[in-house]
Image 1 (cartoon, rainbow over the protein chains, first blue to last red):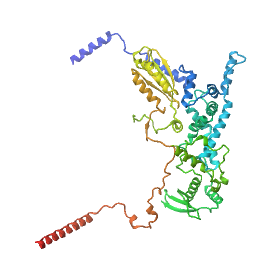
Image 2 (image 1 turned 60 degrees about the horizontal axis):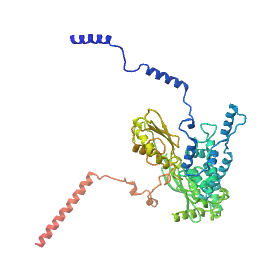
Image 3 (image 1 turned 135 degrees about the horizontal axis):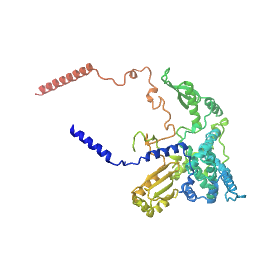
Length: 348
Length: 190
């Protein structure tokens, strides 16, 4: 006890005698806290365009852009393709506000290129789909084409080849419509700088490949498949198919499953097979399956993206519409694809 | 790859079906930030002197920027086509290490690092078609008459103790008979 008391006394003396100096800065934490509070009060930071950074060289970026795509562009055309009308207008207004009455801007906008590129893309997509899916009714082709040339798809492609920072336009962040338009104008610029062949390959590599790995049935779903199938078969002088229940499991349970096959009455061939939780659904699924097989759109279809692009069918080719679709009218057209496929296999 | 709870999980994905059409290097821009005098930037300075021209020539689709900053630790910023941006510290790197790290970041897709749930991914619903109870059904069942004796039994039945015992007795009996027979044969031969 004695020793403890003495130690305490000594410590007291030492405490009172030492100068109060701390090893850390007491002002630091409050300052940081205050800075944080002010920053929070200002709200979230607005996104800034990449061109406001010090490390930004537009010419370098343009060069890298064309090299990235592996294409040779005419520089002026590429510049024009990336310039929106809105940019020129806003620049002129800026000059006027400074006091220049007649602003001089040596820039052309891409509106002409957009229409040209749009037509070119539509044409190539159309011809490719008609070549690859010769048996699919025109309605289905139109739906797939709508998906491929929609603003949504084109803006996605445009963003992922890196146009979003290169576009000269007034809106920031860049709108989807602008992105899609720029992709169209770039295609047109490519047509003018390197010719149709390169541009067609460009459309194939970037736009057509968007349907790879997609479920093709999601784009077009014919209504009343049972009626449609019997109508189509009637045009080929085949009686309407006979549905038969060929499988049934878990009847009167939650997990009931029926399997229906569709058979042609005259030669007893199965033309469709489907299953579902009720017999009616299974019948409809079987009809859908039959239609898919007729239209050459089976579940396991692999679209050939490597077909020779010079041999795409003519732009005025039209597939049969659903209302006049019959196998007898089809025969010469449907050989397109098989012909190209054999050609590719032999050349490989 | 760390598999802790903070790492996002997902499937390997390819941006823009890259490779079905043509391959695009996803690294669009790289900024090398270094100090002109400090020792920690020695390697990156060596890299700039010796290897940078080769790198730029091999990757013309990537814009390269140099950004000297006084008395700061060196790093490089990789920017990808999908809008992602990554900062990699190059403190005390050698030129050779710089080459390797830049190579890693030029060959990446730019999708942030994640723990893969599976090593593959497909948008297509199924290759073999949707499963139903009739998929891969034994074709023998097409001609079977129901109710069938064989299918009513359990698929695997364990032998009861009585049955096992009976079998053992049966086996021993046969052996005894056999032994007697051999003895008899031996006797006749004698």
